[in-house]
Amino acid sequence: MLKITIDRDLCAMCGTCVLSCPETVFVQKEKKSIPDIIHEDLCISCGHCVAICPQEAITHRDFPQGSVHQINLDIFPSPEQVFELIKARRSIRAFKDKPVERDLIEQIIAAARYAPSGHNAQSTEFVVVQEKETLEKIVESTQLYLSKTAKQLRNPLIKNLLLKVAKYEIEGALHLMNDFDRIVKEYNDGKDAVIFGAPCVLFFHADKSINFSDVNSSLAVQNAMLLCHSLGLGCFYAGYVVSSCKRDNSIHHLLSIPNNHQVYGVLAIGYPMFKYKKWIQRRPARIDWK
Ligand SMILES: Cc1cc2nc3c(=O)[nH]c(=O)nc-3n(C[C@H](O)[C@H](O)[C@H](O)COP(=O)(O)O)c2cc1C
Image 1 (cartoon, helix red, strand yellow):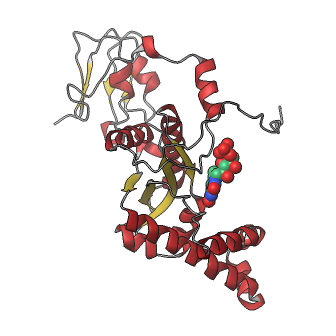
Image 2 (tube, protein in one colour; image 1 turned 180 degrees about the horizontal axis):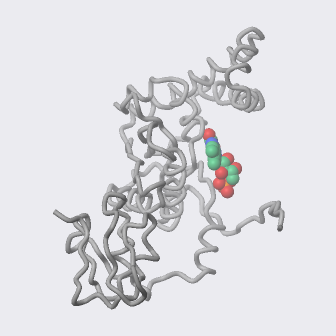
Image 3 (cartoon, protein in one colour; image 1 turned 120 degrees about the horizontal axis):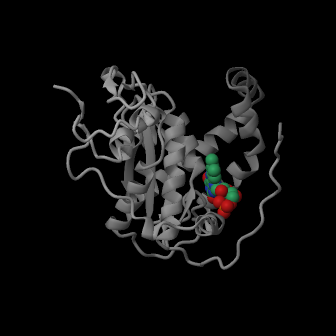
């Protein structure tokens, strides 16, 4: 059965589907002719053809009725509104002792899913953690990883060996040693500087063998962060949890994340204790105009 069909009676022969398809599925042999579907096998199910056709002449097996929606231009934010949201988002590290409602988490994940992904792979998968004990275990595993790494990097033999296998990563870690020590010390003093007591932690993971799965997840994270902020929630990228997942499999085990998957992003989410009323200017962009 064909995946894509063009209704020949409805088609206006405008060629928009040909121009918007990223994979040359369609070809228009002459101007003002009905396009032919020549490479259906290349279709990545991005839905551009269905979304762009002004005549609604294209049907696609992967987008049955009810899966194609009108864009609501009445609620489209202005560039100023988008930029204000972007500037107002800050990493929040002080949370109210209040759980995040499930429907809000679902909205955050929905926003993440609309990020672009290489070849429309939509590779990112999610784990939502709200159980107190599991959150505590994540913090414990992360600080153990930081403590172990700091010890290893203080051993000249191990340090030099690691520098040989992962030069840049280890050089980066060496700059963060004080941070590692501080987080471990705070943990031993009963403080959580890993997720800062966030009541919800959202993991972004994906099959490592999928091209660009790391980038796909990072883009999904940014969408999620912006939606989080617009919902009145706060979040921050818990980088040390990501590093711990990369180097140590205890969190993978804890959350039953498959071995062939990697955690590419972790957001600690909750209701912010404080709301920022000001945004702060960034450093000037380093741009090389050619
Ligand atoms: C890759 C990455 C890792 C990060 N890791 C941490 C982290 O482990 N702990 C933390 O408190 N903040 C972490 N952050 C948040 C940054 O510190 C923060 O984004 C930066 O200081 C800019 O502040 P802003 O997000 O409020 O604009 C991380 C951010 C990124 C992008």
